[in-house]
Amino acid sequence: MRALLFILSFYPLWVTCAQTTREPLFTSFDGTRIHYDVLGEGKPVVLLHGFITNGESWKRAPVRQALADAGFKVVTLDLRGNGRSDKPHNAEAYSDNAELKDVMALMNHLGLTTYDVVGYSRGAILTAKLMTMDKQVHRAVMGGMSADFTDPNWFRRKNFHEALTKPGSHPELQAAVDNAKKSGADTVALARMQEFQPTTSRAELGKIRIPLLVVNGDKDLDNGDPKELADAVPGARLVLVPGTHGGAMATPEFAKAVVDFLKK
Image (cartoon, helix red, strand yellow):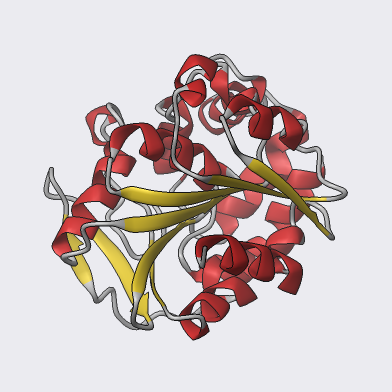
């Protein structure tokens, strides 16, 4: 799968870079400590990373600096279970939209009452749920995603969970699992993320009134047809930028599309 090639090609750059400190940290609603970074001043926007990555992925994409240069306060974080954040193993730590509660708690911790959100890949799935949970979200961008995640039994979620918990169950995913282990990722936490991945139904998407931009690589159908997502949310726009699932987020065209949309 092209998405797996993306993980295997970029994962070491995003996760294994030398890190000497976990600071800054904040303590979330259940005591889990979450690492975050802030760049720039102005209108707040939070960036949500994808699966088997962390907030460092945004630092290697031009969109973060482009947003800061355009007058935004850019917040990145390592979602629980990733990077420099705590990595609890118990089911309760990931159930009931815990990751989204972390984002909301972080915004409160920083004193940011209204904010935009940009999510890519799995981060886009979290973005969809966040739009239904937090009235403080002003605008949103979902990248690298279709509406297939609205199915709670989505095969991509189920297959990755099984690959992480039942060795040998999905040979096509084994290389990604092996690479995650080699790079030091916590595979128990990763499995929990898939087990309790938020689901936002099509009916819920249809009730969203937050301005939404869907951005997708013109060669990316890894997660389905992005037009289906844009059609599911009233008033949503779809922009195609060059690239596959692994490359689109790192393009200047992606950065421009995001900045232009959020500046409106």
